[in-house]
Image (cartoon, rainbow, N blue to C red):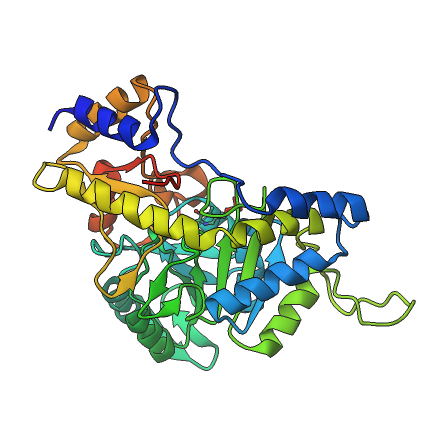
Length: 381
Ligand SMILES: *Cc1c(COP(=O)(O)O)cnc(C)c1O
């Protein structure tokens, strides 16, 4: 397939001769009205109705017991891991094939990442690889799941729903309960994605979402912690604010709070965006279908949702034949001002995670060398 025909296809989809970004936000609903409302009311900061509204809207949509809004997705993930009991010197199993924020969140709690391979169907953490790694390196003790050699506690596992495609949550849940490990879903990219009818981020003990400008909906910057029980939710609100014990006027804080809370100004934008989510999801499914049909039978393998899942198709992707064809695709598309980007470099190639324990990463390396993301902004087709 000629790369020029891919460029023409994308230009035709977005009906433009200008630069085509990978994913751009649009504000065509009540976003402006809600944001103006916060300015006119002066409630732009930590107090105001939109934070509660945004959290309740998200609970209704996803079915999570409790949603707690935060300043960004990294903070949401960090808070979720903290709530899961992750502390200094603990091990946290995750993917090397992820955005760096997944690892930054656990790093700042003083924990260390362990990288296991991803599945080729979901592009996310492979339950078989995780189980095999645990069988070889871990044992159950009174402290929980412990690394045989270093005696570090393996406290949590963080699978990531890559580009919105849900990981195999039933299998991961089974491995986690067998080994007494807490499951924290990095659902930053997967608002609107469902695993066997359950919204991503609601199956694990905790989930974390992001509303950064490039995600399916945005609050400017923002994130959210999903909690499995109302009690966890109360504690999540407590630690992500200032951990203040309610009192009409006294200041008493009973633990160190993070002050990760989302300002009302951002939540107003989120409420407007949330009303558009169904439209974005519908448009993105049509777009993914178009890409799929376009690439059918070609040497570019379009990445489809796993058969057990409904994906939000946040970022469309193709797997190229080899590193050489990946380079050609990236170079020609970007040259033509139609944005395409490679998947992230594997985490163990970055200086701060180079010394992390890791398993065989054959699938991760295969994808790293071949995957290219294509323009995916919602568009009416
Ligand atoms: C976007 C993203 C995050 C969080 O990002 P923020 O910019 O902090 O909101 C975390 N993990 C993954 C996989 C992401 O894509």
